[in-house]
Image 1 (cartoon, helix red, strand yellow):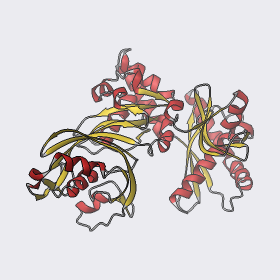
Image 2: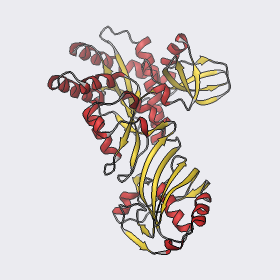
Image 3: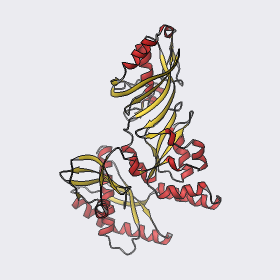
Length: 414
């Protein structure tokens, strides 16, 4: 089974197990349990069920024992109801990312006096929010994630789109359960400010690469030519990603294969440049602002602009200023992240993060049904995905089909 299909099966099992643990299992030793994820092995023999246990240490031990006693029963019920011919064996285990965060939080509680960082760890632990960070130059996106993990006391942090080390600007982080929101953010339009350097081409199309060509034909560029070339790049484009990029080739990022001396052929893709405005022109350098679809490589745009003007070029500087409706002005600095003194405006609630999706308002009864994976009758046009919201709380992401609202990802009560 493909990785995508196994992921879908794991999510289906997570949702159904959350429901069954509430309604079917009557073991008195089973206390408060949250199913945080299910990983299915490639051979489909085993489903590792990650759970968060609540209560005292003794209560948690009893809960885990009760889960293991109930595993054969749950496997039988789910296999029958989901029509799975070979239902995987259910193996319950504590969610290690949550346990690690709890250990770090305990250490911080012991060694730190009450203050911003301690309050930050406590506040970040249970709220469904994304965090906006302004990445400085010289760090990878993963470096910023590592700082956030240290400060916030959890390893369960991811980002919604990488930035190259030389680039600065907006990085969107999902913290804790909010990592499940990221898939709905990676496809948002982006906006950048940057600088093209004409006359020099590099193998990576950015300042970190090796020079591969150099000329002085940029001296012949006229202002009208420059404006016309930029205007001609607005709209749909067919773009080949840079060889030094994170695009995966047979499961391995292209830049790794290139550095191992392998030959890489990357397929062209369709992207859209929605705006391309020129700023300060001091040849051979030109500042610009670009708004584009997700997946657009600004490095490639810089090289293409040079090609249209008959000169070599590379991207000398880049700053991401916007992702969807989120602007870098709201973002926390790296020093604020390190110190744990994050401004409130750097946090975005789940409902606000998914405000670009169609919204379906639900009442308390409907929210309760969605939270346990049940469908809800709902009038309205077919739409997918939709954000199911009660007040300002995101309940689920789902789809409306034929007057029925079906949850696909549940964010409360799971």
